[in-house]
Image (cartoon, rainbow, N blue to C red; front, side):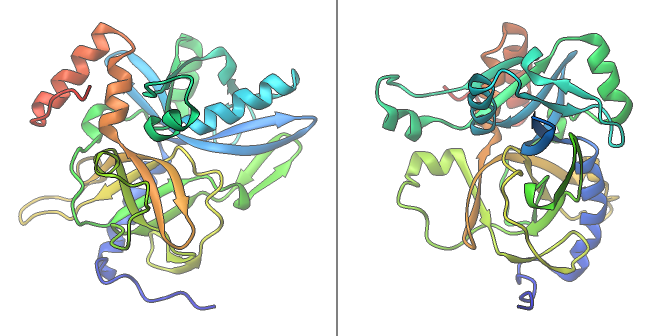
Length: 299
């Protein structure tokens, strides 16, 4: 089946911006890999961030839940992220401190947990040698790379689908997904209440879509991209010089999708809330960022 024409909200000439935006996203995005009995698979995707002098990997909560479940079921199960694009060396995430944001108000009510869980997890790297290894290959974003605005502009998803990853023993090679789309304008899910609309961003998902070069592609199943960043890519105003560092901004963490309908992302205010709960110093940094953007801490 041939891919459809580009959505009218995304002009063909805009795709040139996404070539640079894709390269920028690739510099800070890593696959989260699980290994058992000589084989490996992608469980999700994460984005690297530095806040003050602390280093983090931000992903979806259900990704870390799945990893913890498989690790509990089999003591030989290992999981981590690559320190390099070419070498098979990994930082083992069980040795990295995990913060799991869970806003459920009633731990004894599973439905309350599902309704209130923003589905965000944060790993903090504490080992200086591991941080140095990561910095040799990867770029850590900062809060200045985040936007709290959700305009009617093209959006990009960049992650590592399991379907495009080849396994050679415990080594993984594959093609990351870079997908250009727009705000979802169709019917909202029944569970998408007013408060959920504040917390979540919905963008369009189509199996026949477009990559960052404007080429029609058949998109693979999104399994594996869970936890990746959703990027808003803005054009330059008159007199501005376009650059991915200033015009491509992270706005959400991908947490769910409905086939041929939408991709759901948890908006970054929930991530900021999670970061602020880690320590008083981070709370101060988050509060300063919010004030610069005319916002207050969400409680």
